[in-house]
Amino acid sequence: MSRRLHVFPLAALSVLLCGFAVAPAAAQDDDRSTVTVRGEGSVAAQPDRAVVRFGVTTRAETARQARSENATAAKSAMNAVRTLDVPEEKMRMESLRLQPRYEYNDEENRRERVGYESSRQVVVELDRLDVLPQLVADVVEGGANEVSNIDYQLSNREQYRDEALRKAARAAQQKAQLLTETLDARLGPVHSINEQSFDVVRPQPKAAQVEMAKASDAARAEPEAYAAGEIEVSADVQVVFDLVTAEE
Image (cartoon, rainbow, N blue to C red; front, side):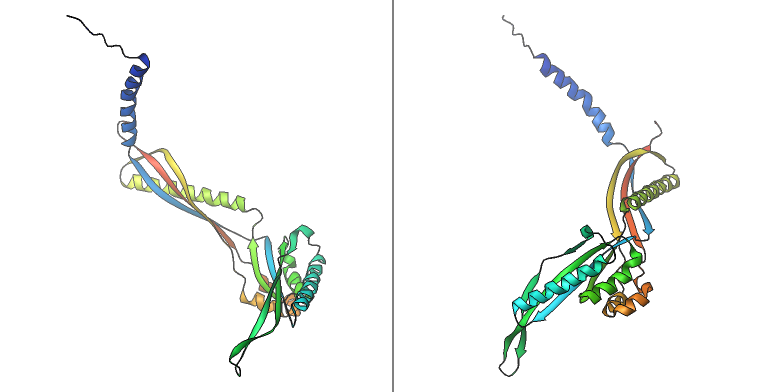
C-alpha cells in the first residue's frame, strides 16, 4: 500500500504557530480592567494685544464719487494709524464694496435708486493696549465711521494652553484616584490620553466702547471704557487608567 507524505512549507507552519501564540496575549489585553475619567482645566489671563476693525463708509450720487470719497477717507484713517508708530505690516485695508442705494417711493409704490454706497474695513493689529483709546479717537477723526470690532488676544497663547492642559490632566488623575480609593481598587499606569477640546473665550467689546468711538474726545478722556477684562483658556482631556488586579 502506497503512502502519501504531506509536506508543509516552513513559512506557513511558522505563521500558524505565531497565530496561536499571539491570540491569548491579545485576549488578555482586552480583558484588562480600566477606569476612564475626564479632567477640565482653565487659566485666566490679561490680553496684551488686540485686532481692531474700523468701518469706512461713504455715500454719493454716483459710483465714481462714492468710491473716490471712500478712498480718501480710508487713506486718512490709515495715516492716523501711522502717527501712533504702528508698523506697516500691522495695518491693512480690505477689499472695497460698492453697491447702489435704494429708497422706497410711496407715491409711485416702487423702489428708486438714490445713489451709491462704498464701504471697506481698515484693520489694525495693535501690540500695545495702552494706546487703544488714542487709536480709536484718531482713526475716527481721520475718516472711519465706526469701530466694527475689537478682538482682544494673547501673544503667548501657547503658554496658557499648556498650563490649562496640565490642570486638566491633574484633575483627571485626582478624579481617578478618588474613584479607585472609594471603591477599594488600585490605580495602575495610564492606558491612553485623549485631548477632548481646547477653547479660548475672549472678552466682548463693551457697548460703551462703540459709543466712545462716535465722540473722539470722549474716547481719549475715558480710557477705562476700553478695559479688556480677562481671556479664559480652557482644556478638556480624557484619560484611561489601568486598574491593578490582585495578581499584579
